[in-house]
Length: 193
Figure 1 (spheres, helix red, strand yellow):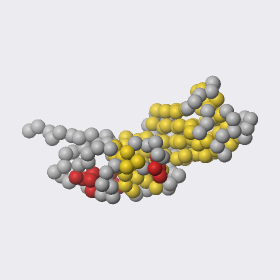
Figure 2 (tube, helix red, strand yellow):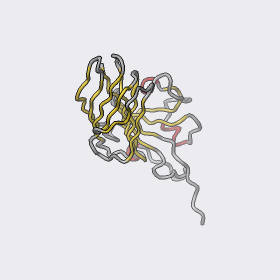
Figure 3 (cartoon, rainbow, N blue to C red):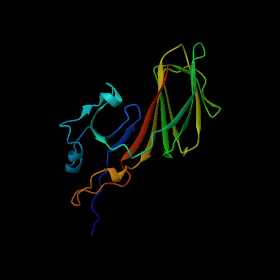
Figure 4 (tube, helix red, strand yellow):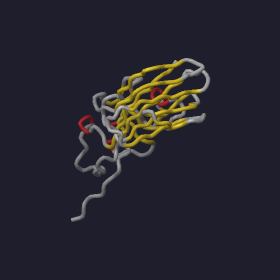
């Protein structure tokens, strides 16, 4: 007897510190009947402005329980003024996320250091840092920026799989999903004024 075909799951569990909410997300496209029930609040995918802004892609979204992940644990140590404008903070993934992403928004980084090691030593228009396999190691960042802008650092901890205990059961007749093909993201935005 041949094993039934598996289907990759595009579902994302997204827990967002600034809104203090959690969401189920799915890329634009067709939904199976089980997913359709999950996103019963929408007739079609939308741009989710509240969490991702006007430039985000259209997607399916629905509110989810907040107890699927811990928020990123951050401690802002210093928020330096101009002319030596910088952000100095520590991040620890209490989720032991295998992937951590940081993105500087609204400023031009001039120098970036992680745990004393220089990652950037020249001005950049944008900055995204992606780290793998850091587990729960304390990550100390110092980000120097040009000028005196109000800026933010977006932190996302990415984990494979979904908090299945928060999802409604999938019907036995539905196409089985590839294990861990969905993902979970815990996010926070640090603002520096």
